[in-house]
Image 1 (cartoon, helix red, strand yellow):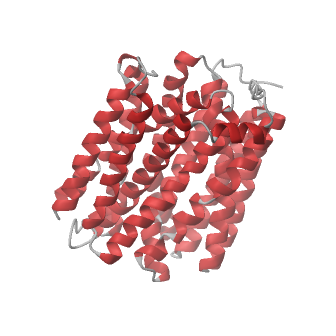
Image 2 (cartoon, helix red, strand yellow):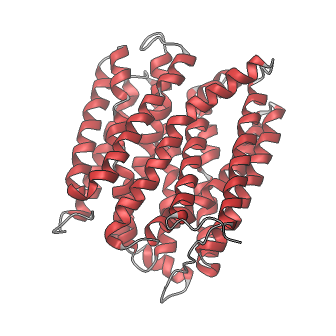
Image 3 (cartoon, one colour):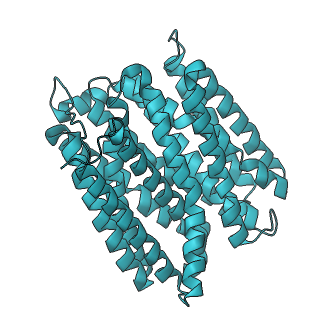
Length: 403
């Protein structure tokens, strides 16, 4: 029996999914400095944790997209919600072992479900609306994602404080509690899914799945935009991770790890505010110009971080969240449009671009180990420059904005 007749209930469901994966992603990133200290790792080895998290975008995305093309978005979404429930429960169990390998295995299993549900929900948001509203609806969903990213460090801190008050001092047990709560949230989403009318969509393709994938891989505009998205994910994760280290390090911010973890929430607050403003006023702006301006400001901030070793440089880096706020919906909507009839394959490839969350942070971590933390910010600066060059090579011949 359907008890939620709300017209936009599917968008509410998908926005809640965007919310929880934002919370999980940022919570996982915020745990990296703690893992580094707990296991005595250098910066490069500490990147094993985001590697375990983001590698699932590559291993899971295409199989999920194939299933989605066969059985439709609705049934795939249902199975992905169930997968997320089970994955979070397994993560909660394995992390208690306090073993590096088992912890990484738990992250892999949990992140696999999260990757699968992203493959379904990201294009679902756009496809449930008319083309002229897809960017705005995508922005609403990503604004929900931003709420999750803002609350991620705060929820993590709250779990630690409350658990400590009950004499639960082990980081492993505290993380286990966090993922038990997330599993309950996914279970609630599964119940909500069963109680609403979610339109089913099956990709309308003239070619088979794998043939369509090969066709897509010959689509140069799409591939360029996919690379732009890969670089974007990289800079988002890099700033969300290493700004904590910058603010905490005595040589730079000197705030200490706990305070820095709380302050980093401002980075995600700025991203949330930017996405809300874009959802409200985005239709009045030229998306291409906004993309260019955002990247140029982020490049300038990266150069400041490169040249100056001060606390105010760390605070300034929080403003990169505002620069990044509009980039994802612009890039994603443009790339999905470029994918054309190969929408399901395109969704899979775009989710796989989250591998940028491994590549660029690893490059920056290597620069930290080889040089200094401030010198490492040459990596995101070059990444933003690459984004501008690639994006503009695709859109320079278009007469109007995608918005």
